[in-house]
Image 1 (cartoon, rainbow, N blue to C red):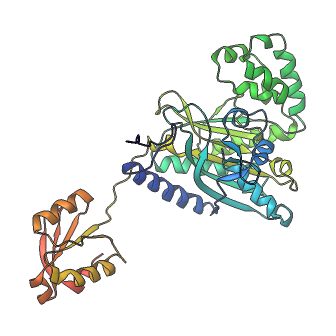
Image 2 (image 1 turned 120 degrees about the vertical axis):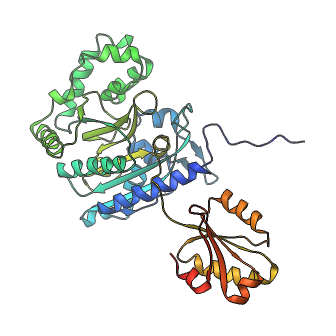
Image 3 (image 1 turned 90 degrees about the horizontal axis):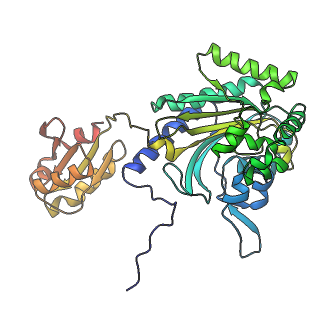
Length: 410
């Protein structure tokens, strides 16, 4: 006998209460994003590997260690998307929107794939909700994006700490990188292997190292916030002023560089202590040169992504007063009419129709298992009198009412 096939390590089915929470999150996060002027975009799960090497960056752990990369049957080098921003930028450039001008705001949600060690809140197939904005360089949009994330987290009652940094621009970053490498050179042999590779490919990524020994060595390293040019410093100061004015608390974290190479200027993370050790639940920043990296015309951009699986551990659904109606029949003669009623009722109310004739007790047992709060039963007598028996399981109220009245109730 063949062995049972199980889901792959780090892959998880979304079903039952998890699926209810997932849909609840998507519906409400989407609603909030739409209020901010975003429209929905869905990009392919599979893209050319070059897209992520050029956007996420050769120095990132994603490209070096975590991509699901393979050669397809057409000998194309492809991979499952490890993050959402690059695909949206690829679409923006492919459709020549960078040359058309204007402002573009999209939100998305869906599966991402990274081959990493599965742990609580971190899977190999995981889901993100994200937003991307093109065509706005104002720091007010940076604040707007942060406020959008805050509104989503506040809606779900999720506590957080906002961490903030500026990563500078091509005017101030090169000098900072040079100073950082010079400072680190005296103890670089004590840093981990990854840090020594990053010193060559993208030195600021060293600050993102999660190895405790490296963090201790880097504690007195130069801070980018002390090396910003006049323009970057002005924007960062203005961002903090806007957040202060709107009573949004934050911590400046000069070691916050994010895990992707494409960020510049504003970088931020929302972290929570509610899922074990302090962990990022949302993050993003400005990427004004990413469109150019992918062959487009220089266009400002900013965005973020929320890790859905991590949030679902904290989401509690607000009480819903929506009725769930169960329609059943007591005998075969009522089946056609009851089926007709279920079709009509479903236009206004969530409805389950039970095809098999059963007794009262059986119907109520099934209805309770399904989570229905209204049970409506049709039998020979009800059919003759053009009525239907209705009972509210919550209030215990029961009555025989006119079929038309039953259909008009909402």
